[in-house]
Length: 327
Image 1: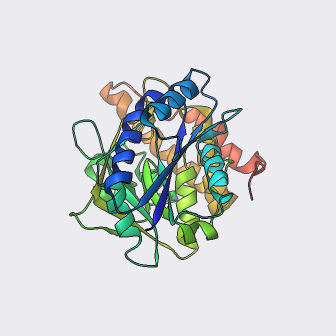
Image 2: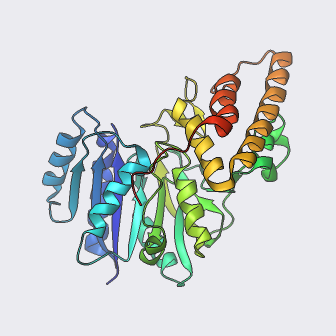
């Protein structure tokens, strides 16, 4: 029997995890895959560890759920890397690792459908689930990689009229699995052999862009990335981050979003390209804000031009690359 290890990084969303554990327990009993779970609590300091420990004991899951309380919040990448380190120390490695957000709830057959797709061909490195909101409507589940042109078009006010070519988001197509550039970081499964090529996420990302960077590295290593729209997962987006759809909810984007944007473009495309992408985004934002002003519209949840110019445009030239804590 093939095995899958689920890694969940929690930050102050512990109350949403027990229902997921119950469903995974049912999958263990009735499914065709061995399943275990590693939960990393990213120094929530809100009673999350105690709540999770009680939930594990109540479920009788001590034998297949490992709880790792972190001493400090190392971000999404750092937390997942802690989970991966725990996996890599085992004598027997799982056949796949399933990265799952704490604010998600899997359909009962989601894990099995992802695993079935992942193991269907040896060239498949990643499979992502269809992400839905609480009413069953699809959230963005598949995307194109960020680019200079994409930064311009996604910032323009007329983006909604230009079609999918003007945005990074890609709608699900049909019910069969198909190849995409990258999938939502809320629920995606990675083959063990792909993790041999790209063992860790880049922990220089505190939050945002780390899953894009991780999947880009796996794709560059020669692996195929698929989306399976039949594998469904409900996502209470923004519970831990306060950001939905790339935009802050009722507050400006946090500084680490800008820093992650800069690091992604500089590390993957070089400083000149990053400067060009930043300039393109600022041009699009300027057009957007002028149009909004003429229409007397509010600017809600926007990327601020001043912090973007400071951290992304100027920072792409002047800021040194941060040190990486993992290989």
